Structures are given as C-alpha cells and as structure tokens.
Length: 316
Image (cartoon, rainbow, N blue to C red; front, side, top):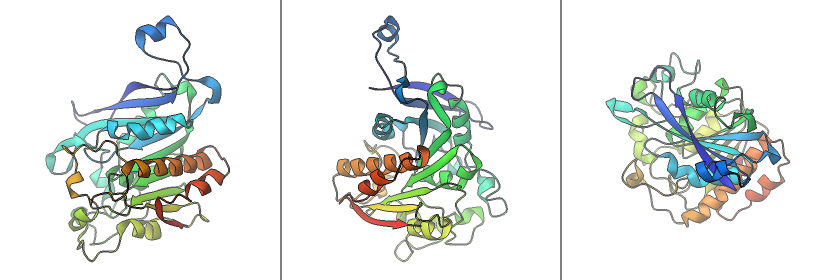
C-alpha cells in the first residue's frame, strides 16, 4: 500500500511569499486498523524494509508535482521513499512560476562549479530530515531524478550533496545560456560525483525549441543530450548510461501533461503509447537506483535495458 503526506521547506534567500516549497512524500505504508488512521487518513510507514532510500524528483519549469505522481507512486511501490515538490519562485525575466530555481551567479563562467546552481534541492533535503518520516528514510542514500530544467540543475549541483549516490535526468543537458556570458554552444562539465542515468525521448521537440538560448541553430546543432553524455560526464566503467526511449517526447516522463502551462506546445507528437514509455522508464530508473542506492546486482537493470521500447543505449 502506497500513501503520501505533505511537508514544506523554506528556501533560503527567497523573498516572501515565494520562499516556501510544498513537498509530497510517498512511502510504503501498512494498515493497522487504528482509530487514528480512520480519523486522519494517515497510515504509518511499513517498517519491513526501513530505512528506505530516497528518490527526490526535481520538476521542469511550470510542471506541477502532480505530473510526477505516477512515477513517485511507482518508485514507492518498489521500496523507495519518493519526494516531489512545488516551489513557485523567480523565473527568467521577472516571471514567477514553478521552478527548481537557478542561482544565476553560480551559473556564470567565473563561478560555475564552486557551488550548487539550485537553492531548492538542499532546502528540500534538509526539510526531509525534519519530516514525520525521517526515521524510516535513509537520508545517506539519495537519488536525484530531474526533468528538463530540473535535470539541468541536478547535473550542475549533485556533487555538493554528499548523500546523493545516484543521479537520473530526463530530457535535459548541461548547455549554458549565452546570456550568462558563455560562448555559443558551450557544454559545461556536470558537477556529479555518482553514476548518471541520462534519459531522453527520440521525439523531443522542446530542447530544439530552445536552441537560440545557447547561440545555436536548431536545424544544424548537435544533439545536446548526447553532447552532455560525451563531454560533461567522466568515464565510469559503464556505470553512466544514456537511454533513448523510442517514440517518446520531452514530456514522456510526465502524466498527465498539463496543456495550460509549461511548453508542451513546442513538443513533437509521441509516436509510441506514452503509457508504454512510462512503464519502460520506471523499470530502468528503479533498477538503476537499486544498483546504486541499494548495491543490488545489475541483473534487473540489464533486463530493463532489453526493452523493445528503448531505441538506443550508451555506456561510459
């Protein structure tokens, strides 16, 4: 049985009222039949496999955390505590919206790599240590799972959080905007001290829709996700993986897609049933986290990578 509770984190340096992230924590639960359960709807965590490794899902810009509920529920069902969050904060150009947050000064050429580029991830990790489920979490074994801009800040920041033992990202890269002072087409080194699972769909239309941010032409640029795998990540004797899902688009990790926000209007149509993509993605991601957070053998990961829904696999 999977249940969830809500929690909150204060984002240091953010101005009120935009200084709070609202968390949802999904966990394996057990029914005891108590009056407290009946009156509150809150069930205790199942102690059988505690403490549970933690998977923190970091969203794309203006993609609400409910879009990742399917994934959080899947991961919790496979023995992880999965966490999503919404932080309405500063976007580019003075706009406000759901964001993983970008510390612009930390992403400039003279300072990149000296500190995390996101303020939300460390704030959420700190808040989890104070949450009602802290005792059943293994907060020394954390996997970061980022989508789009959430994946970018995760790749730019993970090594600054010692508890992070695995990083996964979907539809993302480490190219940096020319507006921050970088030369056109720059891919910066990932700031990650753990194995990386870099995922994408073969039908991603959103990434090319942002090519001008990086001083490039969409029709002639090299694939920034593959460039990130080749140029931003170190060799890890095959522990780093790039997985491309056949027919999936930029929002292949999202369900349902909210057509009233974010940039799904830039995406290409999926040519594979999105439910099939999600099933294959969940299998690969959970098996990857099992290897690096639980030190389990890689048999399940090897099996998941044999899915016919995967178009390409690369290892480093």
